[in-house]
Image (cartoon, rainbow, N blue to C red; front, top):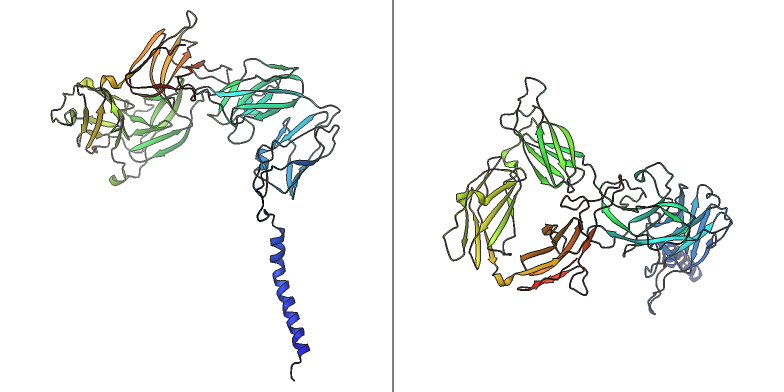
Amino acid sequence: MPVTNRHYNTMQVRFLIFLLLLCLPVLLQNCAQVASPPGGKKDTLAPKLVESTPKNRQLNFQGKVVEMLFDEYISTENLQQKLLITPQDTNPYVVRQIPQGFRLVFNQNFRPNTTYTISFADAIRDVTERNVAENPKLVFSTGPIIDSLRIGGTILDADTKLPVENMVVGLFSPTDTLPVQRKRPQYFARTDTNGVYLIENIKAGLYQPFAFEDRDLNLVNNQPGERVGFRDTLVNLTRNYDDVNMIGFRGTVKPRVTRRERTDETMGFELSSGLAGFRLKPQPPTSASVTPADTVVAFLERPNFIRLYKPTGRAPGDTITAVITAIDSAGNSTDLRERLYFSPLKARTRDRTALDFNVDPKPGESIDNNQVFTITFNKPVKTLNPALIRVFRSDSTKALTATATSFSFSNGNARLTITARTNIADTLNLLLQRGAFMSIQNDTSARARLRYLVLAPDDYGLIAGTVNRPAGEKFVVELTDENYKVIRSVANTRSYTFARLKPGRYRVRLIVDRNGNGRRDSGNIQQLVQPEELIYHPGNQRNIKNIILLKANFELTDIDF
């Protein structure tokens, strides 16, 4: 039967409808996407809050849902981490996104007669150009009044005097018996890039201000090594305070062993915090089968890792009881009682780490002709052959004579200091020949030749000054590089001099040494002891704070305190 035109046209229509239905989901999806219209000016306006439930500064709010609507489509980034609700509340909530805003649905009613502040940091952005909503905040009360007191200030780092960003500043009740490390603050805020914080809408009362880093974002100072700060006195909040400033410092934390590792020759202890040094003392034997005296070689492989080596003649399964006395940078010591034993599985010789070292100063640097070289090894050195260590000029093969006083070991024979007093005036070479060092595992070092440029007397500068402090006050003057590494120091010297300094950028600071121990003591949050005061010289650079620029053959004699 022949196909008529009418029947053919009907088939075409049906086919077109079928194609349209297939394409419809794609068309609808594209229509639903929010994007910048092509052409025109770039959107530079931040989203603005246009409506909220409750309304800003509303009284007697009794609901459990907080809703915020903006004048354009928005997205949120890490909202539950960046959202701040004060006073601190244990009322859980869920976030529900809507096109131009969001809802916070709480499980319980808010506390009665309480002023709440909800802020969002930079969590709210528009979807087109990612413009950040400027300080979106909602304040409301579940009672008949809005609390209006505020407290603010600045947090500076105790060591550098630079602002500390994103530090939590909290207000705690002084009547709470729990320590700060086990509770959350009633009111809190986080510092900005300038170290500035501001807590608003606080109820009048007596508060204990504390500041702390919050790396795990749980609003509790429970992580060892986090910076903390506190005020020596309580704040009776009956008026606004804008100058409650604090110093952030890293308090002393007792180290503990967090990991142990063993081979048939070595044992390692990883600690929870870095050390300045340690002492190892084997304990008296508890049975006749244990050797009374053992020589255990150990060194600080990293600031938080101690490596020990099995004594000669010891079987891997033998146990040695020892006390490790860990010493922190403030001189505090902690005794760690450990059982030392080694793996019964014998390691292959080729799996051992070869003896290696680093030299400070690095090759190519400018040095003094009376130079101290520090060689840091990756494991302890058993023997040193002075005949294989030579110091000489580039145009001469005659080496200087090395004496026993030229060498000094430390850190369990893993650090060597070489003092080279010479009259070389141009280029100095330090030659460490193969076999100059033999490790505790009987492997030897490779050959190394290191070349340095010796500075002339006119290439150096000098920094000096006078300390005008109260009579009887103890102090220490420290010279550091621009990265705060201490280069030299003098104690209780009112007219000080740091001579023969390389040209460069320096800092000079004064430690008010309260206890007269010749070093700076960090604070103690448990005992409410502030760190010893640190005062920086303002420097001689207009645009760089605390930096002293020293040029060759210059003497800066007015760096006074």
